[in-house]
Image (tube, rainbow over all chains, first blue to last red; front, side):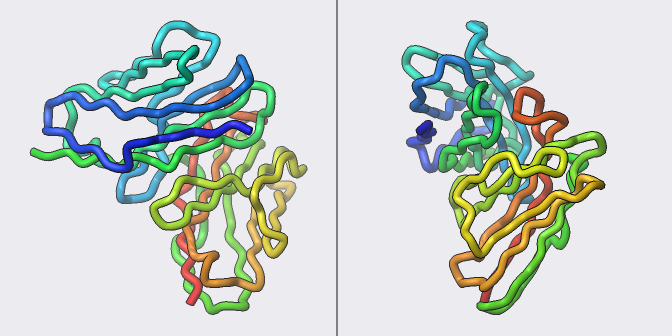
Length: 115
Length: 114
């Protein structure tokens, strides 16, 4: 069974600085999708970024980028120029490209942003 | 606004009771997923429906059941409620089966069992 591990329960960053959130996963599959979701205090789940495993190029969405290391099964999220509005829980998630049902979530990292 | 509507937003009920949570997916989305998020935990997959049919089951208790109606809205029924069922219940929808396209989450229903 696939698992997703986020080893940092909490992280903090100064406004305008850069922070990296870690995520590792375990799978025997070769084709899958990885996601980062943001959950602000409103509890809404918001998709931040998505990576297809077959793509070597790391995904980027504005200030958010990932470092996808397929061999190491690592999928970290980098937030550049952090803003106060980035403060939230961040969840890493995995979905098989073959077993097209559930997303498997990590336990989350709480990010605090200090002015 | 994701376009996924969940009602009610909050629900307080007593142990042993039964409740129904409702989800209206985004217009055109055929796939609906239900997740449970206990306090400060990740999301646990409960069940998926696609165009009215059950597609996948996760760690859903026998006391819980769900269905998707012809108009594609979905309901999650929770019965014989226990204190441990207190959680945030999310519904998500996507246009097709699976998550190749983006899935959109509702704002959740916070269930408190007292």
